[in-house]
Length: 327
Ligand SMILES: Nc1nc2c(ncn2[C@@H]2O[C@H](COP(=O)(O)OP(=O)(O)OP(=O)(O)O)[C@@H](O)[C@H]2O)c(=O)[nH]1
Ligand SMILES: [Mg+2]
Image 1 (cartoon, rainbow, N blue to C red):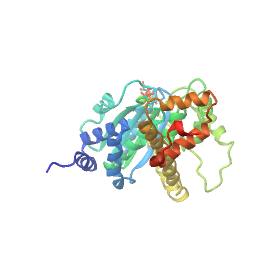
Image 2 (image 1 turned 30 degrees about the vertical axis):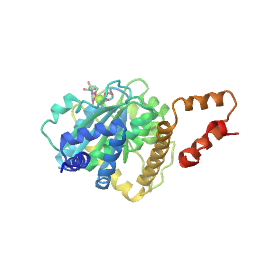
Image 3 (image 1 turned 180 degrees about the horizontal axis):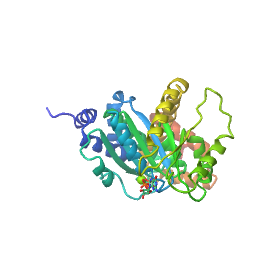
Image 4 (image 1 turned 60 degrees about the vertical axis):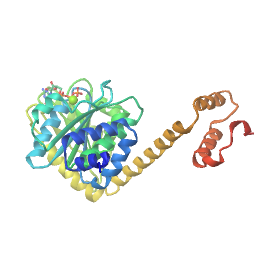
């Protein structure tokens, strides 16, 4: 008997097989039924990994810092997976195993898995694909999964919010503190890192972030985001950063037990909404959605009754009323 390819793949993922992990991440990136079946198969083996989100504007030193963190994590014998997300990149990460430079830096270390990901054009799909890729790495036995994403927009906020901790990277230079505030990353940062601390103006960025944080009153049980200065190129400050991550993890375990549950709730709602839309797209006769759009724009139908009809049809396909019989 030939083994079920999917069972075989999920078993190899759980065993930590690098090629299987790469294949599995490609499947979840494709956002098709095979990816969903794979997640179903590995899901019971997930939930152990601690997810670390890192975001910052282009060139702030995220990759350099992540490399340092990998070394820090590996020195304590833990397995680490990295997902580098670039929402703006036109290139698919699918065929590539990872960043070439970094592949070399950690070549031969089976305790490190690095994967680049990029959008494949479906809106909102990237955060979901990233979460699923993190599940793959989790099932593969990674103790820590780092999700690195470029930029400061809503996509990044969504992606980083799916992590257990969010680290925001800033650098000295034109209005970086302002940049963070504008994009709403102030709210998501559990730790603020001022990288390139060797550069002129680092202390001003620290001050800027500190004065922003001081606008909010933190009581004793709340986490007040620390501001850590690092120099990723030399590794200075990275040990402090990693200790703060550990402190946060301990704090969150006792003070934020609901955090993961809220994430699962958001996830479930997202999957539900997406699956419903995909189902509609699949079963609706070609051109019908466009006709409904036309009817709404012509005022012969209204959006609410259209959606109500669609829901009835999807949920009770046997009682489908043909359009021409509808009053
Ligand atoms: N002076 C200085 N340069 C740094 C430091 N950290 C990183 N760099 C340099 O900054 C440049 C960008 O670093 P990356 O690690 O590629 O930055 P990134 O945020 O991953 O960049 P993107 O992925 O393009 O958004 C590189 O030339 C690094 O060597 C630092 O602490 N000090
Ligand atoms: Mg980078």
